[in-house]
Image 1 (cartoon, rainbow, N blue to C red):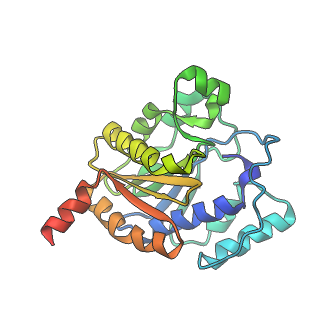
Image 2: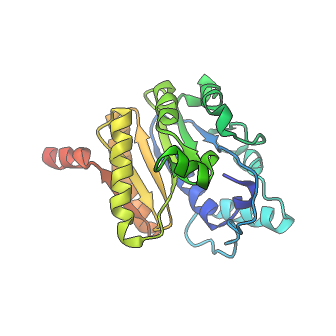
Length: 249
């Protein structure tokens, strides 16, 4: 995550989705944001700010418009926005830049309480590691979330908690679904879970893993409607939970 992205079209989608999962998942009472914050750059990313409210959350839309109008693009503003919610919000190190050299300490130091009964959102610039270390260093290794980082955080979460990971999609649209299937299946394997849910708009995706089968069943039943409402794709990889539910019907 970079502050230059705050309040853009992707952020609007991102936080609307996070609020949906927090507000509809039984046993969840907080949103924990792990931003992996990196310095702004000159790429121009985050410049898509001319978006409409549509049928997403009106209060979120107007707050983002307010921040954009002030030129105040900083993820710390989320503390103010979420302050009046019925769920707790915790922005982990949202004012300190993340560096690969401190990777282990960064993830080990997330407070234990922030991982309980929570939607835990990890927001790397690019997503889960891809290719070898030399490739990621050329692209900027700070932009990637490593598998061992994910496992460490997930193992510390309690049974009610839900993990959501930001993933930037590749540009070849013909390979997007296969890529998401591969990423989701690998995530399920690393976490020892039967399935991982995935929501995407063809540009960015969110991989969703739960500690319990009951939570995943609930999410796999509620997210398809949300995805359809907002013209998103929803997948469950591998689809064993869906198949089990159909068999029991």
